[in-house]
Each structure stands twice: as structure tokens, then as C-alpha cells.
Image 1 (tube, rainbow, N blue to C red):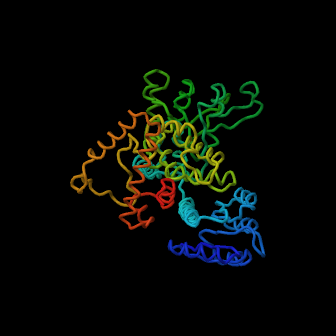
Image 2 (tube, rainbow, N blue to C red; image 1 turned 120 degrees about the vertical axis):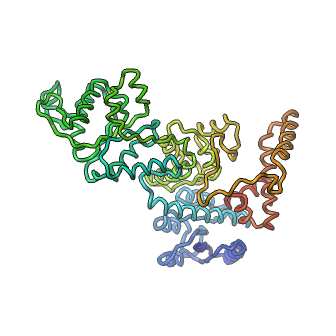
Image 3 (cartoon, rainbow, N blue to C red; image 1 turned 30 degrees about the vertical axis):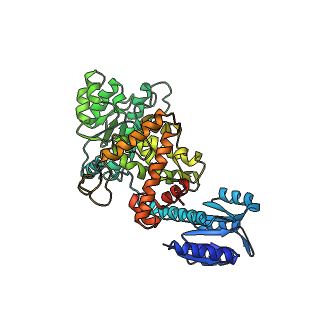
Length: 493
């Protein structure tokens, strides 16, 4: 880890912070003025920069602007006297990670710096991952099956039918199939057959000759011609009008088509990939989709899972979309807290990946702070968890088991075999306590029991680790900033 840089002309401030951070085993480098910092930045960069506002030889606000111009992702904490609060707020709006009013409480200052370090390390890992982000993300088994299928189809020109709910990423799969195929050098042309009026769709697909109908003042190439030598993606094929299905079938069968109003057949060497959110077998039985066209399209079928079927992918997707939204809007990327990520992963996302992307864009614009907590999430996400009556840390009822990302999970061991009381013992005690509080009319039963539960967990972990917070957080499976915040919130200092 790179050192934390402290910039302050007051020797006592530098000394106190150096000693406090050394006790936390955090490397430190101190400066007395902004000029020396800018010189040092030519050869090196800190993990976190902590700077005073008013110093001889330069302003912390000016330093912030110059540092952010060179290292936009570097967390900068501005220290300020209360009389400089307006300047600090201005700095915060200009990209500072946080401001620290003087005189400050040392443990809180260390906790803030620790949180900035965690943010910096997390952003580094996200940046590394983003630099090599593929066109699709997914570690869930169902998505891995899709990736394997794309790989197997890379050397084939066979027609593919992609099925899946709206917003699940069917066009991304189609683009990936094209990109990894022998036709990658040709065009990829997409058309949503449900979004174009029936009277215009035929011309869109096949083109038209001049004078073919009123308003056809010039010959126009259709999507089949535009995609020549490449791939034509027909989205929402289940909504294609019945009479046009006949023309599409003829193209797929004969490799030839006519422009609207044309008499000369045109040859087509286009690979067709179709997609639908509908059940085509049902559409065939209802008589609104041609059975022969269905079989012609259904050579290879890829089913894309809904997002709720691969919840383990939601955190990685959310971080990716938060980064992308920030880049598109030209702002500092915001970070989702662990609890916020858990609550988002619990949401069903009827609009699938597209809805998750929209939520991340909303958060980038609307969330008030750089770190997003559950209270900052959109109302529909918060309402969903409340309807379930679940604490954000409770497992989702449809989640079979936690995802193992680093190594295989050990074989399950019963509580009794591990030397612990059976679940029923303490759960029965919890039920009796909850029942008593509820019957007595307490209004904050959830918060009261949750605080006691979390407090006892943290106290136990700290007792085992002899007060070492980082080790305790590791044993509990939570972040270092999370345990520090909880200790403060629960009054365990």
C-alpha cells in the first residue's frame, strides 16, 4: 500500500496524525506546504491525501484542484477550522472525499482516513477490473453456460434464437456472437421488429424501389442489404406481423429477397440472429407465429437467465454501471456500501440488467454522498425489502447458498459437531425476547434487537482478537470501515 500524505504547516497536527496512523500500521509521509506536495507528485502518488486549507505558500483548495486534475480517483480529505467551513463545503463539492473540522477527535479522524484508504484500494481493484471488462459480465453458472455457448458458436454461421426476459441483455449476446464469429469484419445491424409500424417494417427490412409507394422518392437499401457479409439481429421476433414472417422464411430458406416494388431478386449472405421475450411455442399454438419459421429460427437456442436468477452477479454489475455512469456524466464515481449492495442484490429487478443500469444512473445523479447507503437507494428498492420484512443482512429466501468466489466451500458441519449449541437454543431465546417486547408494545423492537445482536457479535470478535479491529472485521466477514462505523453507532468505544 502507498503511504498517506499529510500536508499541514502545524507540526503538532502532523505529529499527532503520524503517531495515530503508525499505531494502525499505516505508512505516512508528511509535508509542510503544497509546493513540496506538487513536486513529489511528479514521481509518486499517495494512497490518500490529507491537507489543511490555509498554509503558507499555497491553498489546500488549489492543491485539491491540481491533484484531482492529475489523479481524479485519489481521495482527498480537507482539514479546516470551523471558520473555514464554507471553503470546506466548496472543496467537498469540487471533489474532496470528506472534510475534517479542527479541532478533531483523533479516533474519528483515523476512522475517516481508514475509510478513505479502503475506498482508494477498492477503486484501484475496480479500475483494474474495468480496464479489462468484457462485453458481458457474469460469474453465475447460467451465464457461464451462455459464454461457453458463444465460444462453441464462434466458428459457425448457424442461425441462433436468443430467449430471455426484456432487459436481460439479448442484444449484448447477439453482438458477442457477431464479434467472435468469422463475420466479425462485417457489419452488425440490429432492428427491433416490435418498435416499427407494420406498414414500414417491410421496407425497413428489405428496402424499396423508387416509386414503390407514395413518398418513395428514391431507392432505399433495407437492413438485409446493410448487413450483407455480417450479422442481422432481429429483436422481438415474436411480434413480427404474420405476412412478413412468410417473406423472412423465404430469405432464410432461399437466401434471396426482393425490395418492395422490385422485380430483381437480391442475394443475401447474412447471418440472422433472432431474439424474443415471448414463448414462441405458445405463439405457434395460438396461430400468430408460423411453425415453419419457428423451426427455421430455432436451430440453436440460447436462454439468457433473468437477473434474479443470478443474484451473485449483481454486485459486480452494479459497480461496473456506477463506474460507467460516472464516466458518462463526467463526475467522481460513487461507491455502494456493503449494506446497499446487499439490499440491491435482494431486489428482483423485473426489468433485469437494463433496470439495474438505470438504478445506478439514478444513484449517480441523485445520491447525496459519495458513499451510498441503503437509505439512499431508490424507493422501489427500499420498499421491496420492507415488504419482505427482512433485515438487509438476512439471506434472500430464493438464494440457495452463498457464492464461493475464491475456493470451494468446506463441507457443512452441524452446530453440535462444532461444539456450539444447536440453532434452536438461541433462536428460541430470541423468539421469547421478541415476543415479550412485542406483547409489551415496544415500538422499536427491530432496531433494539438488531443493535443488541450486532453489538454482541462485534464484542465477541474483539474479545477473541484482543481488540484488533481489522482482524475482528476479517473474522466476521465485514469491511474494516463497517466495523469502525458500527462500533461508533453502537457506542462500543
